[in-house]
Length: 85
Image 1 (tube, rainbow, N blue to C red):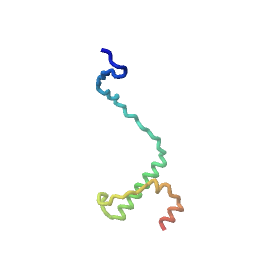
Image 2 (image 1 turned 60 degrees about the vertical axis):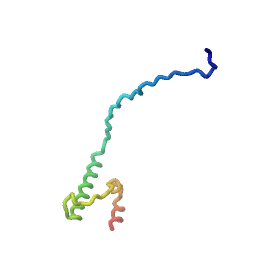
Image 3 (image 1 turned 135 degrees about the vertical axis):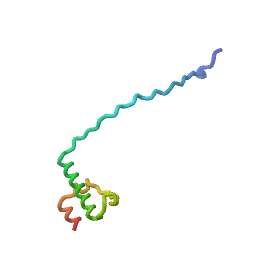
Image 4 (image 1 turned 135 degrees about the horizontal axis):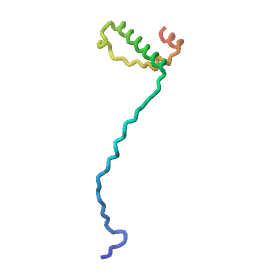
């Protein structure tokens, strides 16, 4: 029983797909400048205090606001004065 070339049947075995071994989670470390972190914390605390004065209520009653502290940190003193006047 000879068959024509190119028409031979192939046998394929299905195997379980091997799952890749679980990856270990790496530790991400970033070195922060302590001075910048303290400055950011001071601004956050100042904003929190001002919101308490403005709304004169408990913290849970203050509306949810989106304040970008990075934008505030990038302002120069002259820009701050211009925007506040």
